[in-house]
Length: 459
Ligand code: GDP
Image (cartoon, rainbow, N blue to C red; front, side, top):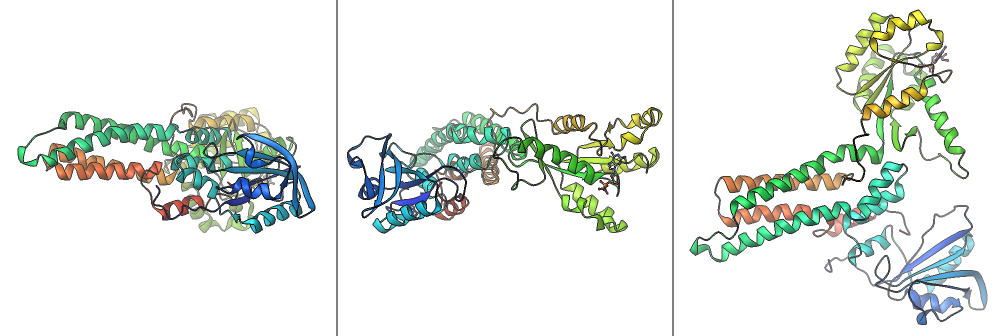
């Protein structure tokens, strides 16, 4: 890794806590060989250069004689730190003015403002974590449900990488045996038992297939299940959407200090996020231009992983409902049949619709909503997912796994249709290359910049 041009000797600085937040305390973080000596120049208290790692010190930050703030300094002496470099965290009072003064002061002394993700980039470049773990740090910060949190935590702690590392080692072993054969080409020897190689490749192929398959569910857990609420105009789509979202907002706003400003049109059912797509279309009452509307609804439904199909029994007879259901069924996407406005139905009328096995709700009166939620969970069938299992949630990883798979298939072909050892070795090396791209054993600066630029500054 030491060849990367992204390696820098600068000591970097950034606010590690969220800018503009209302909390009492802010944390400014520095990393680099000069981190401790720079802070020492502006800190009045103990001599930080003489203190042990993992200790906390009270004192003041001064610009000349002027006290800027009373602070706590936490010291991490490299390599025992997140970045493996010297790291200093300064806990200040959370004032924009104080933060800017302290960061400005330390930049004047020689620190440089950190770029997005630069702390974690250093952790990766200095061997503190592999690439998939570094990416999991970003996922962890973004996680907003129990499921996405657990997957990110598992990946950050190395579950995913460990599994790949083991596979890589087995493959490397065979690649080197085959390369050894090349040195003895004249003698026509086989160091690498082809049968053993075949069964190893098949085993790896199976594990990777499982990882690739886990992506669909992993992705859903991480980003939410895309759901569409569909049905003819006036069946109560927007009333239902509001009922689901309002209940959620009410629950969440009970927790002091939380807001849902940033998470629009999502609900969380037992740790799984459901994301309602194209809700603008539902709210927009102009959407009712008939012929076009139908086509658009179809397009919209195709983007969903789950469809909530609503009927208004005061508007449609059972035959009409049945023909609509057939149409939805033809999309091959799981759907839930909902009879809305159940408050207007008599018991006898209810019986008529029972053949459809629907869920009866009244969006307006909030009846049947819990049953609907249970059914949503049931439909995505997440109960059989064990989030302790290794799960792939990153599209970059899936692509690399797919490429690995193709290379492995070539190796298998090579074993069955005798090709020379050098070609076989090449295909194995190719598979190793793709596997290495996931953990960062093999990487390019472009890839790293692309990954770390998506981080927040200070991480
Ligand atoms: P959309 O066009 O499908 O989004 O339908 P709306 O949500 O705008 O609802 C159409 C009309 O049906 C409105 O007047 C709602 O108040 C009414 N409505 C929606 N849900 C119910 C319900 O459960 N019971 C009753 N009685 N009326 C409802």
